[in-house]
Image 1: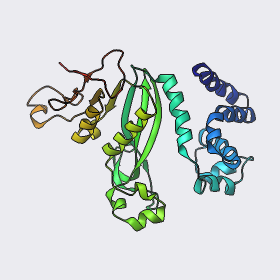
Image 2: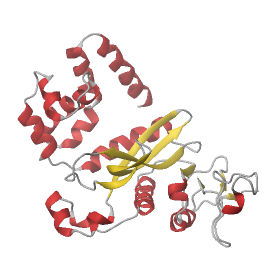
Image 3: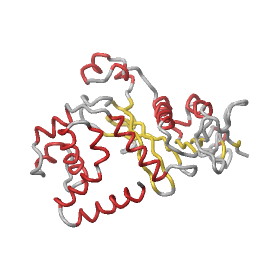
Image 4: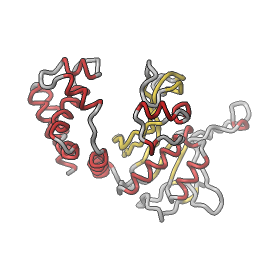
Length: 287
């Protein structure tokens, strides 16, 4: 599967150089395993057109300009696919995670927890609120998504993106109902809590990794660190320096240190060669 995936990926670039029609056909063949999970003919026809619009030429990637650049799909049909189309994401995730695990999964792989932001101008998009936008490096009106990435060497593969709902949303049931937020997702969850839920799903799917990495946005959360240790995971998170560690007091910078769990719990440390994320595994404490 690894070789066939790479051959298909490499072939996609060759198809791209020979013209849009051939390139689009190659894209649809590459999307084959994902299209099977959509469950209906309309979805299987619209999906390649939408993906081609996202990765094809043109600066504007909203539905109207993408449809205008293509003779193969009408605007109203593409809009319905995105705005009102329903499909089960589980088969698509299963395909993605299986391919990602086969390509980069293993004892030397890292599971990286982070978040990303989508700047917005309006107030109608689900979860939009004034909050820190990583893309802009400042507070802005945006959506925030918790990301989980499997990486090995220089190859990162995104496994999931989960939308974070600020309290300004979860405290307004009417607003969530109007936006179509499912009842099961209307309870407030912190970003570290969402990350732990995603890690559990990745483990349950059998994706292999050796260590969990996260920046200080997650490392500051003691429940997040404890949850990692309770699952027997090797982890390393960013922790901002304490006041006594700031420049002028001590020269050490602890922002990337290996963090220790409470006495008696599985302690985070350097990865044991040949060990993966199984819940029964233990870690060696850092020196």
